[in-house]
Length: 235
Image 1 (cartoon, rainbow, N blue to C red):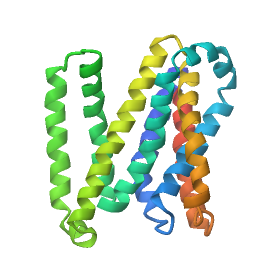
Image 2: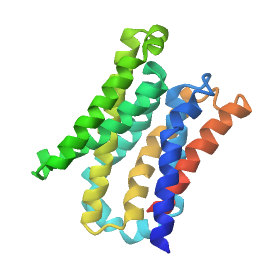
Image 3: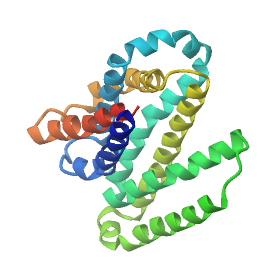
Image 4: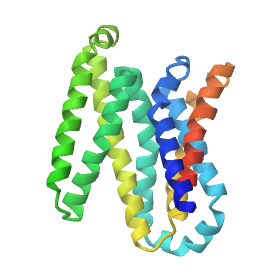
């Protein structure tokens, strides 16, 4: 039963995650930095509040591996800022696809370079198809290019790659911490909680329009935190 709930939670979280860019486009007044900081920052608080027992039980092991925890927290903090700014610069379609599709590539590269894990042929074939798809979407968005400009689109693609790298980075760190015997909830709560310590204070500078209208508030709170809730159920 728990496995079924977790599987459904993963699927629903994927839907919310994949449509965050579309939802954010309905609130153009909000800075992409503010949307990312609000969604992931309060997500970190939620994870910590619901994982206090696991955090206490695994505190000593987390302290032992604090460099990894700091690295993972930094990746969690950078990821949403790069992700939402990428969509703002390159458009929702390009920013979302580049960010999400590049994460598996960086994950495999990290495993290959650090853990010396071989790259499977099946994965290479799948990646080639994915890379072709990304290229077709980027080249086919002529109206987006006209509206955003070549420089802005290129910056958006670069930020999308940074988002993919940091997503892969914190996923890899989480995997390593769990392999050291740290509970999965404690692992994710420590990474997202550490990121929240940086993201939430930044709202004092970037979040002035976050609660200006009901639409702005709903985009940041309902859509962003729905992803966090279902991600939490999947852990």
